[in-house]
Image 1 (tube, helix red, strand yellow):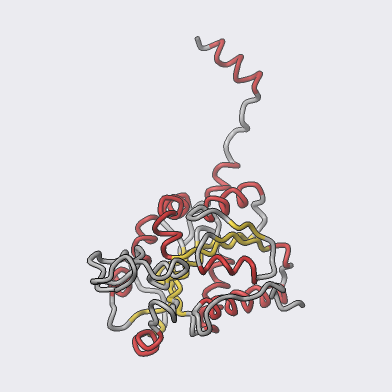
Image 2 (cartoon, helix red, strand yellow; image 1 turned 120 degrees about the horizontal axis):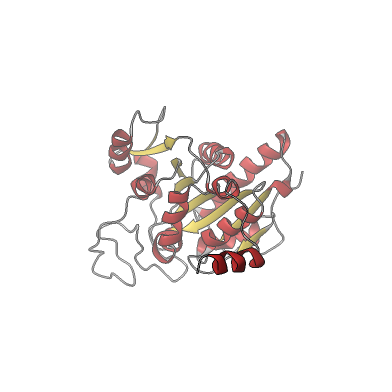
Length: 273
């Protein structure tokens, strides 16, 4: 099987956390192909930002979306080709800033797609502005005196929106992250993974995450416990916070009565004037 690496020049910074995400998704797809899948079963979409370059480097089919719109494209792909495993890569700004509405509604609908969120806590491609997930006090080009806004909790936000699979990984723990990706891809419903991803140029969090990240042994017993653990910044939990089954959007739509033809619609309107 090929290595899933394209021939494009890689321009991520040396030490960028995106490399860990790239290697983890390659590992998970390779394992699935070695079992009972083919590469044609997988398609990706990505947005704009450092994360989006994964579209150039990962050698599978896909679509390079507009800023904040990658998940909108992914939903269209799934509706038209429900047999595909659709994987979306988004940055914290791309998915929770410009694309917040698409993210929340995809979770609400329980669209059967996977969103892998590259959370580096800033807009790295445009040299370090504060993002929706930047921590209090973060200093960047747009916040030289320190960020005064609290960040979203991505985990709690997506659980509240209705995502049926919610997890968190760390780009330096590739094997664990790859396992999460595998579970997310195979999950039937909207699956979300927040990946803690250091930005070596503008938000180097390796030391923080290496000391504070802790892998959970099991899924929290209930939503309140999951929310509490997701907010703990002293021991940053990695693993699955929610995994449940509920109806998926594309099947609910397909189960409805067939749409009217134009002629049927005209006749219906004439009869009900």
